[in-house]
Image (cartoon, rainbow, N blue to C red; front, side, top):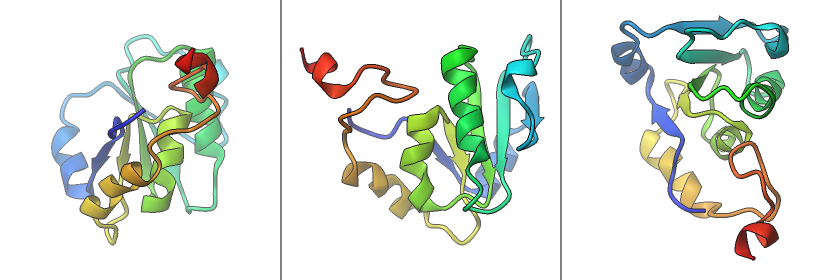
Length: 131
């Protein structure tokens, strides 16, 4: 496991890319298992504050149980420290809070290049992948 597969965006980048996408904005208390995802290309999961982790569970359910293959984007109070966990739970992009540095954010993935346990993206644990 190497390199960043999470697309990291500034708020300005995100606004420029939003034109024409079939987007669903999901509230933190919504159950992803009750959604109709036909035609949805992107689901935005909001972090009202960095300590609220409900969007991680929603992303994991969307990827693993529902098999959603579109973009899952983190919005709101998104900090650099959260990015690696976001990728592991199924997010494909994240819009950083305005005071966060994109260059430093991308270096987070060099610091944590691999994990022993499986996750939403790499289902098998490391020992099964290595075998």
